[in-house]
Structures are given as C-alpha cells and as structure tokens.
Picture (cartoon, rainbow, N blue to C red):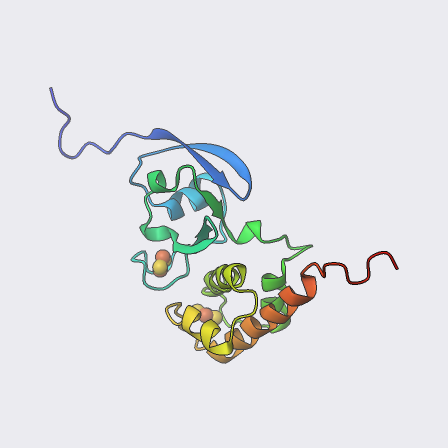
Length: 176
Ligand code: FES
Ligand code: FES
C-alpha cells in the first residue's frame, strides 16, 4: 500500500562537511541547506531573508563559491565543502573580511551583513585584488533594506587591504 499523499517525507541520514568538520544529520533530502545549518547544526551565520534565492542573506560558500543556501537542497551539498560565517573566524579572532566589516561599522540592523561578508569572501578567494567595480558587481544582488550600501562598499574595500596584509609575503623578511 502506498503512502498517503500528505505523508511528510522521511528523514534520511546525510553526511556534510561544514567548516572543516564532518557531521551527520537526519533530514528529508529536499530540506534546504539553510534550515539544516540553522536548525540541526546551530550555525546561525546564514540568515533566513526571502527564502527565494533573491536577497543573499543566507549566503554560504560551497567549494569556495558563494551560494544561496535557502534554495539548495541539503542532499545537493553532500560531499562538498560548506563554509558558513562561523568558518571564517571567531569573535576573538575574526578573519580579515569579518574584521573589515567590524572596523567600518557597516551595519544598521545588520541582517544582511553575514551574506555580504560571505559574498566578499568568495570574491577575494578567487581574486585577492579585485577592482572596486568588481566588488560592486559581486555585491549587486545582495540586498540591504537599510540602505547601508556606502559603508558596505567601504568595508569591502577594507577587506581587500586587510587580506593583502594577512597574505604570506614569500621570502620577504625571511632569514634576517
Ligand atoms: S534567504 Fe536565501 S537568498 Fe534570501
Ligand atoms: S544593515 Fe539592515 S538590511 Fe542591511
């Protein structure tokens, strides 16, 4: 006998690699990655904004690329490297992109910021020295309803500087 049409889908064990750790969750495979990260793994860096892939609040990195976790089924994330805001640094030791946004105080309500930080981080991982125009177009589809765009751009530019300062400098200073 088949299941009634309104029977909720069964949870299945799913293995994920999140912020460098392998974890197992039990979730219906079509559940969004965002809900699993927040509800099962208590990773609240990615935010629920529109739930439609349009605002960017839920941005995480998947294999280093910015992705909107609200529209990605968790099964599609199996075997991929997932990085959330928590994976960039801690409150005590924020990563360069996080530090830039803190320094520039680029927030009003702050709801959009984690997605902005992840989007900038993704760009800097593939291009450590992007132009202002490249930063602008990367952030173009991340929405900020508070209109904090000027400060967010300042923070993005500062992130480029801080990342350059944090980068290994080859042989410079070695053996002195
Ligand atoms: S919550 Fe995912 S894009 Fe808006
Ligand atoms: S600071 Fe409020 S949505 Fe961007």
